[in-house]
Length: 62
Image (cartoon, rainbow, N blue to C red; front, side, top):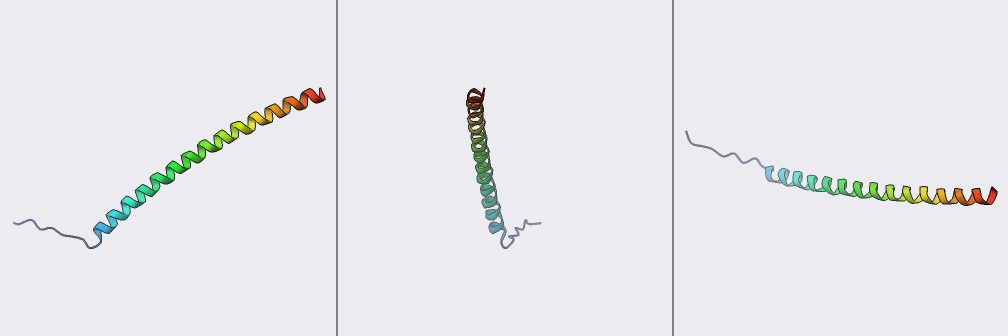
């Protein structure tokens, strides 16, 4: 019995689309992680600013 190869029409396109989707998902995950770090940094900045502001107001009113 000889081996037969079956080539599915569009299989290469589907494979290529899968790789493109995986690449896009990786980039989106990286962007989300970058945004998370930026938000955490911004939160630390605002908490520090608020703490200093509260200290100034306490000295002024105290």
